[in-house]
Each structure stands twice: as C-alpha cells, then as structure tokens.
Amino acid sequence: MDLRSAVAADETLAAQQRAEAEAAAPRVHLVVSHIDKDLYRLQNDGTATASNIVFDQDDLPAVFKLRGTGDVTPNPGEAIDFLMAGSMGSPVPPQLFARWDGQGPAVPVRVPLKS
Image (tube, rainbow, N blue to C red; front, side, top):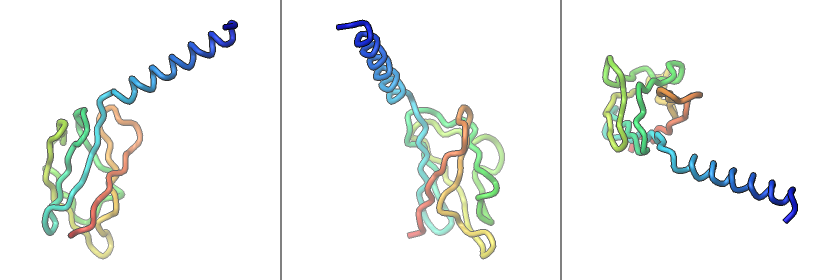
C-alpha cells in the first residue's frame, strides 16, 4: 500500500468513526399527538433531555397554553399535555417550530390533524 492509499484509508476510517459516534449520541425527538378536542401532548421520544423548550411565537395559533409559566423540560419518554386551538386569523399550524438549550436553529415538530 502506498502512502496516498494509507492516508485515504485512515481518513475513511476516521470519518466512519465520527459518523458512528454522532449516530450513537443522545438526541431529542419531539412528537405532538392530538388527545381530545383542543388537548394535545408533547412527548420527548428521544434519548436526551430537551431543556427549556420554546416555540417560535410567529407560528403559534390563537390559543397555546403549555404549562403557563416556567420551563418546559421533558426527559426522555416524558410527556406534557397542552392546549392549542386556532381561530380564523390564526389557525392550528401543520407544524410548530421548537428550540431548546443546545439546539441551534428551530426544529419543525409536526402537528397531527384532529381525529
């Protein structure tokens, strides 16, 4: 094996190891489900805690009540119920945009249709 081949093999192995480490890293995975009428549930189906979740205000419907005041920090597997209702001028959106500590840009979280 020549030097270029050895360097390329080392770079490939390093890239593969980085990808595997990134895939194994704990992640937040937020899911919204419709419970009944205007009651929804926000659940963290990930493996990391989502600390201090906030939603982009521009995308919220007319009524959005998530724990009133204080932080919203669901641990892995934890769920939080909240109220959400639309109006003619501000309907329930097809997704909410969430941010939490350590998360860069807002992440879309799909909102299911009422059943």
